Length: 286
Ligand code: CAA
Image 1 (tube, protein in one colour):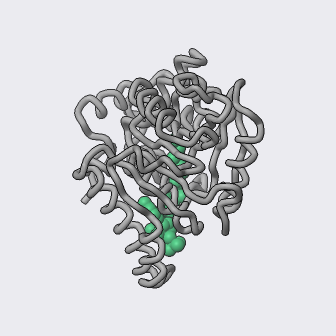
Image 2 (image 1 turned 90 degrees about the vertical axis):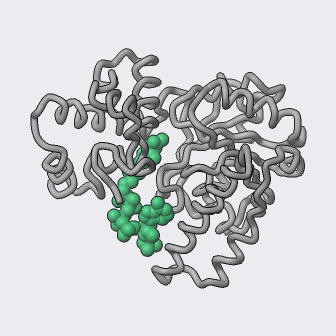
């Protein structure tokens, strides 16, 4: 595997997605700089990396030596200045436009003039983020799926101002990492979420109206439709806050009622029950 025209890649934000992306890049042989906001968040990011690679060792998919090599390729830091010599930086901070715009303004200052800047946003406009930099032609979306080390699809998003060469270089990187890129335009939900979330939202509405139990809806789709997970198990994996954000973004753009968030989803998010990451969402965990 290889990083194509990229050799050193920064990842900003080491939550579930950022840590997964850092692992994928390091597994592909790239030098990775992982950035978090403070030491506590950095320790959490290191924990995600340790857990995920530890799981691979336990399953006999990776040797302890291989694991050490992967982790050694990842430098962790709280200083944006450590991204100065990266060819590509992928931002994976929470889905708040103002936060992402602040991160990109900072990246624009510290990164090399020829570096490509990418956002892993799943619901915000890549164009809105790109225009906060002085290099919108070198800004792309690179949308990984959860869990990033496992899911093979990566959506690569070019905006109306993205230079086509930047999209091609990032798509080549994705291929080099053993994943499958699809190139899509900057529309809410891109392709996969735009199609997936109408279904997930309908499942939530069905449960909310007493149509069937969570367990029975999950079982119907898993056993009957051959999906790897039922809709509620999947929403809990994605995070209910993320699900709500994705639905709101698609609804804002399309006004398609299928994407008007089901009330039960909003209630769970308000109550802080966000899925696996908080120990309870539609289902309880742990
Ligand atoms: N991190 C790293 N690896 C993980 C993992 C995680 N969180 N969860 C599972 N894995 C790995 C396991 O180690 C295992 O690897 P090997 O085959 O190499 O041993 C493999 O995945 C299968 O795991 P399990 O046998 O434990 O479990 P499973 O067979 O039920 O598969 C799953 C788990 C891969 C998550 C599968 O259920 C699945 O594909 N679910 C659907 C996931 C999906 O649709 N994701 C997209 C969500 S939409 C999105 O992410 C976009 C967005 O913007 C919100």
